[in-house]
Image 1 (cartoon, helix red, strand yellow):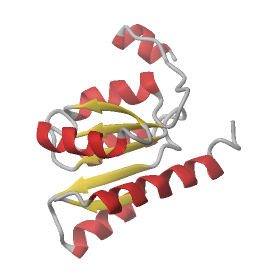
Image 2: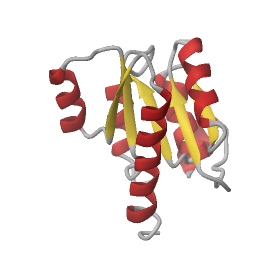
Image 3: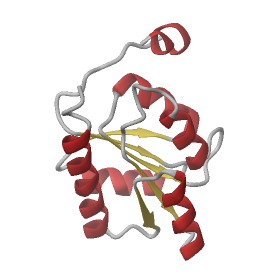
Image 4: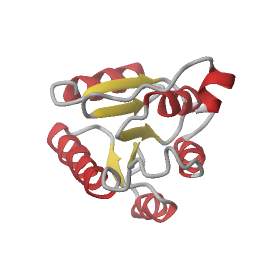
Length: 145
């Protein structure tokens, strides 16, 4: 993809196993979520929305988990940016947030997030929702290639 090469100075990598991009500006959350997922998946990380955007374009993860509030691009802006590109529009993106209101969860789902996870992270719930996102990706995206 020209964006990766010309603007970010990177090339696209095709993942060889199931990959997840975890995005959070809180290093503790980033490390916790990564440790939960790294037994089953190859985990990439990013500390802000712009870094996540670059990683999504160059690494082509199968699933993305993003914090709602981050520097540079928040979770909603990251979602919007990735859904507007043909190369990344099919990636299921899960919003992670401390907000526990029904209104916020409804807003996230109506905006286009695949799912919604509350902080603090519950490992079994995280694993189940990521597995569900992978199942969706495999059924709906891999057949379209």
